[in-house]
Image (cartoon, rainbow, N blue to C red; front, top):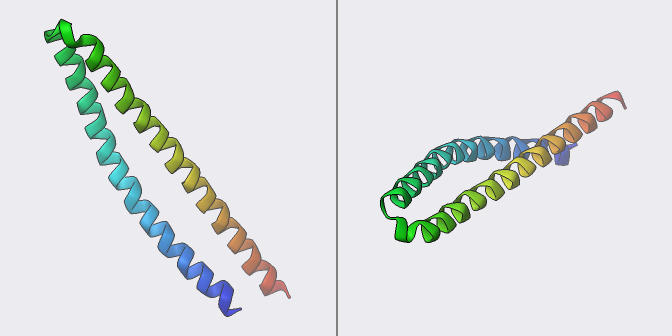
Length: 95
């Protein structure tokens, strides 16, 4: 009984950290969008560097998308853990 209560408290702490991470990711996303726009602007002003700037922009955007996918997957796993914990608590209460 104490283990499940402790686990639930830890899970709630992780949820709070996850929420803070989502806020950080939102700010980071705005920065990535700004960088992508700046790269496009520079590419239009400096045609000789257009290919290199495009590659760098694509790398940043691609890395950003992978990070978002990983964060989404972790959030999904966390939600599933919370659902399992709630189920186990309800099950324990029925016994």
